[in-house]
Length: 159
Image (cartoon, rainbow, N blue to C red; front, side):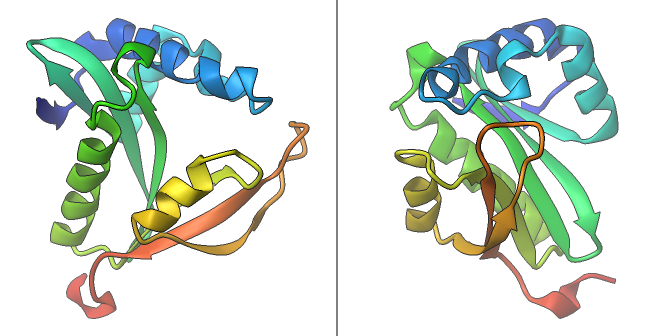
């Protein structure tokens, strides 16, 4: 498996990956915009944020986005693995990759939001060292999310 920075040429396939990945959440009652994302939207994410793709034999099978929100914090979002590849370690490898990048780039904390009532996502992140630090109410959804954070570096590394 290779993990690399996404390019605009990856937009269509990555949009397909997200639509596949987020269908399970929709079935569980946690619909997200990524479940119907277009390649144009993914192209904008690639241009404006840091998007990374996981590929196996040149086939893109997963993706994740990082957004700098503060000088010492980065937000992890849009972690998605194509349904055909779930359970094969792609998500863990993507998380490992971006957590290492965040630390190496001097960020102290990686944070994310996830549905608090989701049957397995909060626990998955807890096992990876993320702790719930707050609530993240959603006015436009029938569910709310929680904020989870993980320390990946020291606060004084960033200049």
